Length: 124
Length: 124
Image (cartoon, rainbow over all chains, first blue to last red; front, side):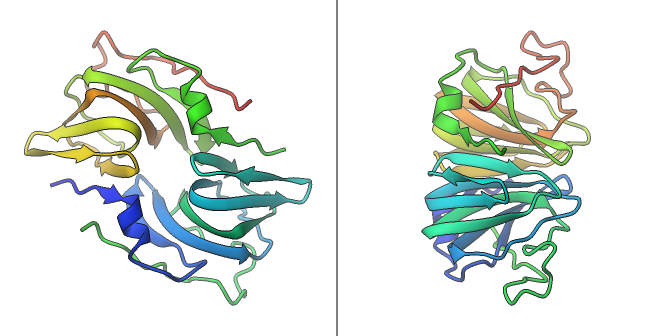
């Protein structure tokens, strides 16, 4: 039987920041939920586009040549190879879509916030 | 420069139902927005999982062995090969994520609501 994911309920089940949780598998991609707070590390993903859909809070996606600010209900796709830095203002709940292989810190695997194996939140 | 998609604005730019609009490309997948009204056709996709995230309205995803009802902020992933029928109660605004190759009516390509080449809504 199919089980749905209730975003507000799923975000209520964790509080750690910069640690994406897998909530869905679709083809070779994964839907992940993450809480952001303040600034992340500048990084890029060589071969992977990454979608950021803001669910709550405020989020700025900084690029080397500008930035995009998101309100809830807005998304951007950061193309592969593009250096970016997510900055929550001051916090954000974010739905991510990216390949299952994507490391959260991309080109900065030695960053202290690198998550090797994201936790999975099963539907309830 | 990166351009964001504002879901409410994008949904305001079309009114036709059962006709997904492409609003984002991510890896080999596409983000599409669609308006549903009433019942769709029973169908499946042989090789493609499909995500339905409800943005507004009410949506029931019927399966042969049950159904899942979605409120805004809830999503399901319908696995490949699974017969399903979306039913809006009575209307729904839906964010879809699926491979670029996915036909909206899947195994029912001769349905009157089949969309061969979805329109693209460019960011504004």
